[in-house]
Structure formats: C-alpha cells, structure tokens
Image (cartoon, rainbow, N blue to C red):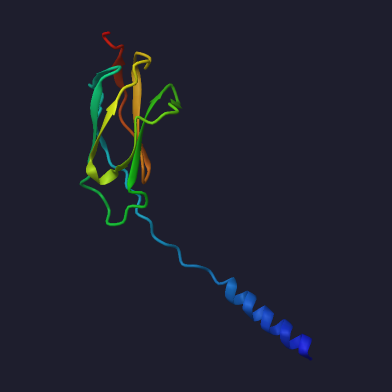
Length: 128
C-alpha cells in the first residue's frame, strides 16, 4: 500500500513539473544603419563613426551591448571593429584596419539584440 501511495504522489509531482511554461515576449530591435551607406567611401587606417537609428528602440532590449564587424564576399571578419558599447547610444567610433582589402563590396554588421547589415560601401587603401 505504501508503494502505491508513493507511486501516486510521484506521478502527481511529475505532472506538476511538466506543466507548460508561458513564453516570455522578447523585443527584437533591428536599428537601421545610417552610416556607412551606399555612397560612403572609407580609407583603411582611418577613424570613422558608425551611426544607426535609435528611434524605434523597444522598452526591453534583450542584449543592450553591441559589436561591429566588417563583412565581404559572404564572410564576416574575425576581429570586431568595436564591442561592448551601448546600442542605445546610436553611434560608435571605429578604425578601419590598415590591411583592409580595397573593395566596393564591404558591409558593416551591427550585432547586439539582432544582427543587421549596412548597404554595401567602399573601402579604399590607405594613402600611406
């Protein structure tokens, strides 16, 4: 009898543990990158300001810290240009690495709450 009672209580406990959990709503923020844009030309080894629109920022941002990477030909560069900055600042200063390959196919990727890409833009070789 004791075994039957113990089995019954355990089965009740397993049902309690198996109750579905209500999903938590997460706001995904995808701020539009304003600069660089399609007409932007950067020079390797120079400093620039990346700017994005913060007007649509939701009340609850899942990940408020950002990272900026360069991307070309379907490959994201392994080293970020900037990281750990607050996304709600709307801008961050970066330095284009001196050894960046010249091309008009560069894309800037802003990671944080989501990953969003700039339009393609140009990086030319350093003048030195």
